[in-house]
Amino acid sequence: MKRLIRSCAGALACGAALLSGCALPVYKPAPGAPVAKVQWMGFGVPRVCQDGKAYQVWTQESGGNQTFEVATGSRISVGAWMYFDHGNVNYSCQPALSFVPLAGQSYLANAGVRTSNGCFFEVVRADAGKVTGVALDDSVGAPLCRP
Image 1 (cartoon, helix red, strand yellow):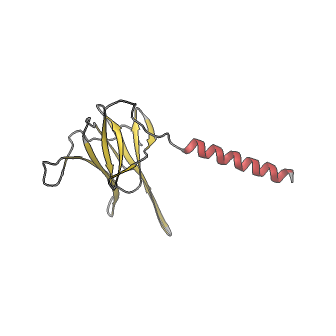
Image 2 (cartoon, one colour; image 1 turned 60 degrees about the vertical axis):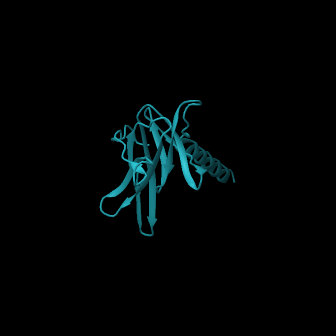
Image 3 (cartoon, rainbow, N blue to C red; image 1 turned 90 degrees about the vertical axis):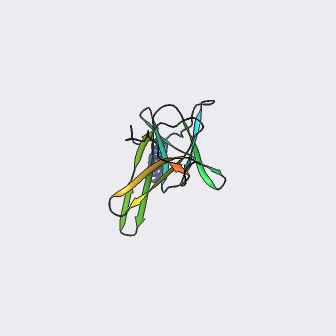
């Protein structure tokens, strides 16, 4: 009986350690700081990496769209963690990029899977003056860290 209790206690301790150690902190821009809105359109779970630290992102429902806010004025890495399970084939990836969000701007972020070469992540700026409603952002570059 003591052996069973020790086993259960050990399993609970390991489970608690895993749950507390694996969860990323939630990303939130500093209160009162200028922000940009990002509309999430992709697969997977969006993440942010800033100053070498990875964060999970909690999206909010806004007019039928999932959105989150990011701090502006400095380069930030954004990406997604994706996992696909198709019976006997499992696939995971973490595509990411970085960009410099501008205060008051809106962006659209998308992530998905290509059939030929893995996952992708893209960000475009909302621009009502364009026929497509979006414009490429010149600040997009390689991720500084992996979200």
